Length: 115
Image (cartoon, rainbow, N blue to C red; front, top):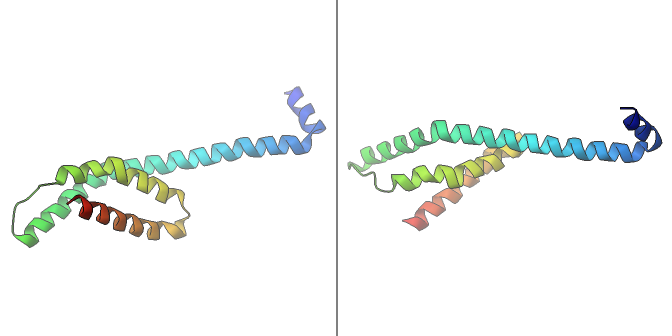
């Protein structure tokens, strides 16, 4: 501990840069972990139910019983929505709603190309 205090006294500017770099990195890493865990939990708990509910609604409106392609939709939680929501949760609160809308449009385009 005494070595650290002597280093800070002798090189205050360099020690502040080092502290800022270390704490800045850990702050960003913790922010990423929070965003990733929030996205993962949200998509695992609510994603499948939401997709099935949308399919039920579509079947009611179209008067048919068709669950073709539901596997692709459920798997999209893993390869698209978790990463998309992780990026969204990293943004400031003011931009999150707009980014969610853009992700929905992008996913709609992906689904229309797949069909």
